[in-house]
Image 1 (spheres, rainbow, N blue to C red):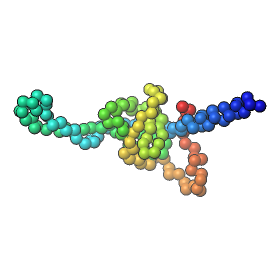
Image 2: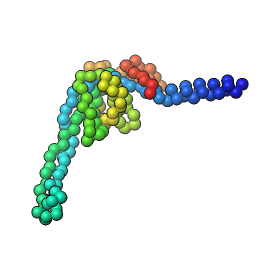
Image 3: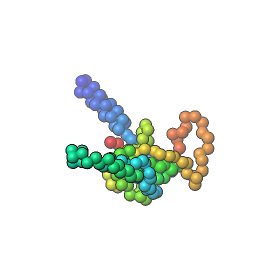
Length: 155
């Protein structure tokens, strides 16, 4: 009887593990990329030699920092997103279809044609699409029954 119990426990645990790793992605298209102002970089101009010799390099250099901002068009909403990692942003191909999901306060995006790696983005703004009619009011508890393009993967 013990082998049967072990097999049942094993099947139960593998089923729970598979259900936990299931992620649901929405589909979207990257419409365009803009370079937008996101602050200033400041370089004080001090060098090691200038500090040691006392030449006083007090000249400060300021330049405008630009960030990538993408327009992501989904079935009902248009998102404006920026990479969370501003120092090493990944350049995304405009016009490609991508998969994304929203987790807590960030948008996780991946392009399965390039790699399955999820990249974190900050949502700057969201607008409902004007070409899609607004959904009719539904009774509470039936929100998840809408027919939207969804991709599920097990990881």
